[in-house]
Length: 242
Image 1 (cartoon, helix red, strand yellow):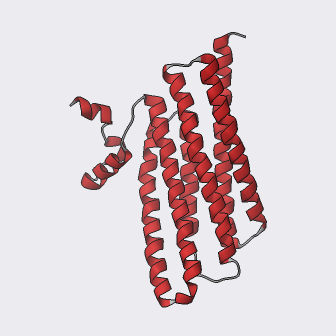
Image 2: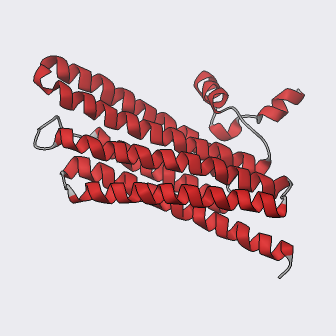
Image 3: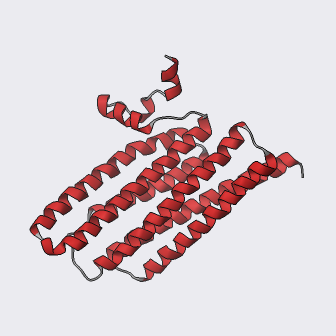
């Protein structure tokens, strides 16, 4: 087998490993939120197991990437792909940790009634969708869909703000629920951070596919300023040329 054919095979395997790690992260979020909502304690062990598996994939993929760089000295697009994988697994590892943190909060909710958790499952659904689509963008090399993740992040941010305000109002009226209420806000915060990591993955996919870096915050400011959609925004390198 020629060196190039072997390298291509290893890249395909690397992509598959990242996809599998992403699927584990998605499952961890789903199970962690289900644990919070239902109180099914068996799910806590499942989330911990998934977190450990995610960590193993993190180490496996990092070694795979470094081996590819050392043995094949990739350039251009191939090097961007490998460096992107190294960055993405950092985000997926953090997502796994946040899922584990959410599961740990379940101990506080156990046996205690708190206002209906309407926004948490809705936030979780949006966030799981973002993680899934972020990995899909990586798999399909779809830069436009990757950029669109930032629009959905705004909705998650708005839900977090809503949870924060409504929970504080509730706690003023029910101070005996303060411990549960604070942890309720924490769960929403963890979900909001997972959405941010999904956007990080999207940003990295755009760079991998196009070789262009973009400023997500600049895009958000532009959208808020004039109502433009994300895909209308001019890439940074084009602005620099004007």
